[in-house]
Each structure stands twice: as C-alpha cells, then as structure tokens.
Length: 380
Ligand code: KG4
Ligand code: ZN
Image (tube, rainbow, N blue to C red; front, side, top):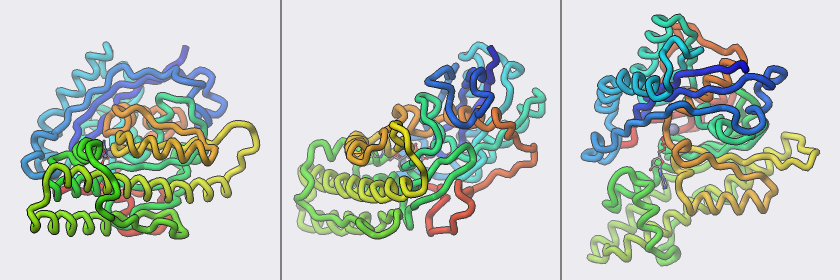
C-alpha cells in the first residue's frame, strides 16, 4: 500500500519538537483534501517534545533569545531520536516539514535552517508549514473530519475563529483585537503570583474557587462580529488584585475565587463569539445531508476542561459535531506539523529552499490586519 512519511519540526516558541508521521495514501487520491481517509489509517511513528519551561520560569514568560539558543542546543539530537524511535533513517522520509512562522523569529530560523539542510543533504522536498495550519489541521490526524469545518484556535499567541475550507484555504471570521486567550491566562497567573505557565495554574486555582464573588467584564460579548478582546479583562484582574492586596485580603480563598471568575469570563466570551461564528459559518456553507458540520477547538487553551465542556455544550445546542484533539496534540508539537506536511505533500505543495522564515504569517492573507492577529510573540 502506498504511504507517505514526513519528518516534522517545530521551534516557533518554547517547545523544541520533532516527529515522524506516516499516512496511507490509498483511497485518498481522487480528492486528497476532502477527507483524511475514513478514520485513522495514518500513524504517528514518533513525536518528541522538549519543553523549555524550566529555562523561562525564572522570567515568568518566554525570553526569545533563550528560546532560540535552547532550540539550537537540542534540535539535532531530538531529530535523531525521533528517527530512531520511528525505526527509520532520513532517507526513508518523503519530505521534511518545518514550522516557518508565525513565531519568535530566532526559533523559527533554527527549525527552518535545520530542515532545509536535511532536505538538501538527503535530496528530499522541503515543506514550509504555517504553525497555525498545523493547529488547524491537527484534528484530521486523529479523526475523520471533512472540509469545511469551523475552527476555534485558542493558544498562547492566537485567538481566532476560522472557516477551514481546505488545505491552505482559510477564511478568518474573527480574531482577537489585543491579547490571545492563553496570554490572558498567563498574565492573570503572573498578576496573582500563580506561576508559569499560567493556564494550568489558573485552572487548578479556579477548581477550588467560586465564580461570582468578584465581578469581571466579558469584553465584546453580544457585539455583531466574531472578534475577541481580553486586555480589559486583564486590567480588571489587575485592579482587583491591587485592591485585595492593599486590604491584605489576597488569601488562598480570594485567589481561587478570582481565578474561577476569570475562567468563567473567558468561557462566556469564547462561547458567545463561537455561537456567532457558527451562525456566520452556516450562512456561508451548504449542509443539506444528515451530517453535522464540525466545530474543532485547537491550541493550548483547549486543554482547559471548563472551556472544553462549555464549548461542547454549545456545539450540541447548535447542532455542530464537537471535535477536540487530545491535549498532547493541542499544545505545541511536531506531529501536527508533520501532518500538515502530509496534507500539503499529497496535494503537491512543496516549497523552494529559499522559502522565508516569517515572524508574521496570517492564515487568511485576504483579511485585513486587526491589531494582534496573525501575531505570535514572546509571552513575557
Ligand atoms: O498552543 P500552545 O501550546 O502554544 C502556542 O502556540 O501559544 O498554547 C500555550 C498556551 C499558554 O498560554 C498556556 O497558558 C495555555 O496555552 N494553556 C492553558 C491550559 N494549558 C495550557 N490555558 C488554560 N487552561 C489550561 N489548562
Ligand atoms: Zn501553537
């Protein structure tokens, strides 16, 4: 049976990652982009992720120079280990795919230069993958999800609602006008002294607390577009923390209650904006058969159980099929980059060796810039 095997490399933020993914191509040739091949005949042969959390912890966020240096120190060894775990050599891969943006440019360059060198030395095609496309297509690596589908991408650098119409075909329905959802979690955790990375720390504190004791805003809720804004929420958290601190009342109970209210506010914003996007998406696409359209949630923030549960209920109310890739595939990894490489390779989409590394790279190049969109910067 024909198959395609791709080495994927991810270095755009604070995870150094390498993976080998193999997919059967048989049955997909008529329209390779329509389906991932009826449910999982693809295989992750290896997927290694080296987190730099300890290196950045001291600074409460990702320091770009430290990240780039750490990628340089570890990437070669990680690629060797990924090949070894997959039981293959570089000559057995069909192409080398690397995140070419958006991201911290020093790190992106390390991954792109390494991928190009391997591709040149082994005479294999190079594929420049948009990190966001990696997140956007990741659900198709593990589940049979056909185009078009609605995607909510919530990570440390991005918060977008996109109609995914095919490989390389994205329509942005909404985006954040300032901070990303994960950034809001990270900054809130920092303000409350809960540590880094903030998302899991806030979720843990929220589980002990009660929403409603403090009143935080739900920015842009019910506005007639699908955009997000979280900077006002962050400012409100800061004011509340300052007030509590000045009164000597910032104890464990207050911390937990504030975390719970913050998480509830994020849930409300994400659900309200997603509901509006579902209406826009249904208006733009025909769904005549019994099959429900898919609502895919991806990105690191999708690891949050309260958020996931809320979005799952929304999907069932609005007759969407809820799809959330497993947590290890939601946070940054190279399997999703290799998978995006496979989808592109099957369509004949490879890139020249002078393809650039890009700090900014919006998925939907036709949508005008909104402050903060298509950006993936340092989380400090
Ligand atoms: O997708 P990702 O690994 O990296 C980016 O592309 O940014 O997402 C990382 C983000 C961080 O902001 C982190 O705080 C957030 O995802 N995150 C969470 C949770 N786990 C990770 N946010 C809320 N709740 C969580 N359990
Ligand atoms: Zn990411």
